[in-house]
Image 1 (spheres, rainbow, N blue to C red):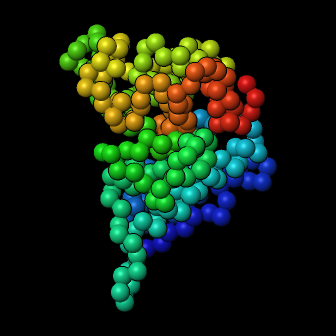
Image 2 (image 1 turned 135 degrees about the vertical axis):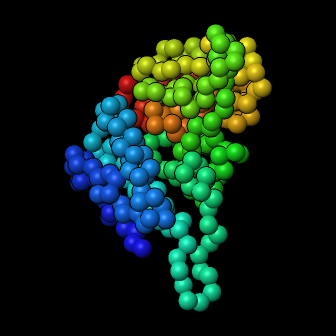
Image 3 (image 1 turned 90 degrees about the vertical axis):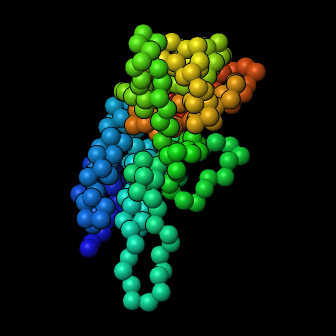
Length: 246
């Protein structure tokens, strides 16, 4: 079995990018990297659509995808003749649905020590920037027996999440320099209702806080309690994520 990851995922000028088999070769034990290749394309697509400057785009693509390309084959146990020398194998569900970027196109939380492992348990997500937006079932208020996943809220725009309909973060998001899909999710919200408060628990959102999700479904930023300046804080966060002035 062979596994190989390219030394670079982007050309020096940031005009050519590698994805899929051109960027990494996975062994059959990793499904030959099919899901990883799709994620490569999804990751670069939203960045191109948002016109992230070439230099920043190159650095962020390397930080986001190459580290995962290196980690994926390393998660597969290696055969050996002596005592086992590899760490415990990560659960399949964590590798496929819980991988987390240690750096890239997101703003890390202040005062948060990032775990060394590159995987979360999807059943108990950390919901920190760089990790996947947690899955929670929501009820559609127009059809109470119909449910939708929070993951399906993520389409082509950044998604702004809070648990308070009157939050000052909602007003700030409505004034954003780029279009955001805004959702305040709680037991009384519409068109999607979170009757059991699962968003608050899984996303670890408290009153006064907010979350920004990238178009590829990864958390880009978390906003904490603040007495004022919400719109300016959000604008600064977006500029940091996109690497340009807005």
